Amino acid sequence: MQRSVRRLGLRASVVLVTICATTLIPVVLAGATTPPGAPQGVRAAEVAGLVEVRWSPPASNGGASVRRYVATAHPSNVTCVTTTTSCVVSHLTLGASYSFTVVAQNAAGTGAPSAPSGRFRVPSAKATFLSAATALNLALATDQQAINGASTVAQLSADLAKYKHAYEAFTSALSHAKWPSAARTNVAGLEADVDTLATGTVNAYEASASTAATLFDTLQVDDNKEIEVDALVRTDLGLPQLIIDPINTASPPAPTSLGTTDTVHDFTGNSLSVTVTQVIDPATAGAGSGLADAGFRFVAVELTLADPGGGEVEGDANFSTTVVGTDGQTYSADFGTASECTNFVFGLFTLLGNTNSTGCVLFQLPSAVSVQSVDFTLAPGYLDTVDWEN
Image 1 (cartoon, rainbow, N blue to C red):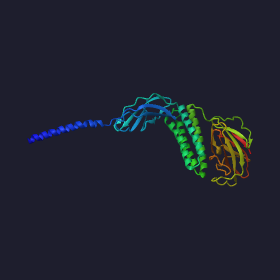
Image 2 (cartoon, rainbow, N blue to C red; image 1 turned 135 degrees about the horizontal axis):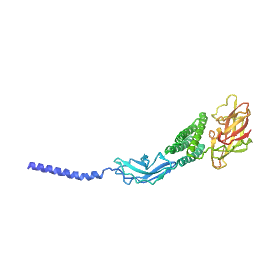
Image 3 (cartoon, rainbow, N blue to C red; image 1 turned 90 degrees about the vertical axis):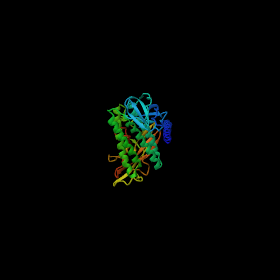
């Protein structure tokens, strides 16, 4: 009896275990994690020169959070990976057409691919470059105006950060594109030059008065390099040049008298009205400008600049203005300031719409030499020059 009882007890235990196991199996299966479903609504768009793919999350995440998405371009199989529902696909052939699929991944693995997007044609090399360049110029124009009007150090720093971001967005658009082989070297050079300009601009504006002049001098050299490389890229891509032949191909116009308004032009033909209102001789150096060299004195040329065309004109008065002394020598700016008037913004000016700006450019002249004439051009060696007799 006892043995039978034990056997019955054993059988009962087996039955109980079997019942419990049978009961538990559906519970485990019901809580299992599976790969997520397919993302939905995949589409592509051009955003500031970049190819951005967007989609909606899958209807089911498989019981666990989606860790990442992988978008793939077809037929190239170039991918981008993200934790959000959009990403930029790099190095697609400019002018070619692609469709895109997206998969979602969670702890259980990779889900099924989405339905392919519609065919998307990547903008051509010309269109991509022009789109990025236009976005850069528009952003810089707004940011430069804000920088010029900044009244506190904190505001200047914030505006400079926006200024640098505009450059970074431009180089990002260039770096994500697969350029024609003929243009790749110059595009890479342009990216490097623009990065240098962005850093140099911030450093120059944030520098002390004693070092700002030197930094702005270097910045002008870097700016000239960027202009030259930009011209090479435009040649590679068959685009019109920004740098045009001098507008005045004949002899320079006859000198005019102080107070007379003359007109010069920038690379794209925009006009700038320039008036030399007075020559301050001698001039008093502004704070931080130091003393004149032995045997020299400071002289300031006051200019009024206006944009009669209602567009945008910018430049550097320190580089644009020179004086010819009674000794026949040409003198360049000292990069300092005069207490009698401001030096624009370290020489820089940006005119938007029908606006004007007045400032002084400081020079050092030998004690025995007077100002014979004043010359002004937006870009020495490229464009037209105007001249005033003192």
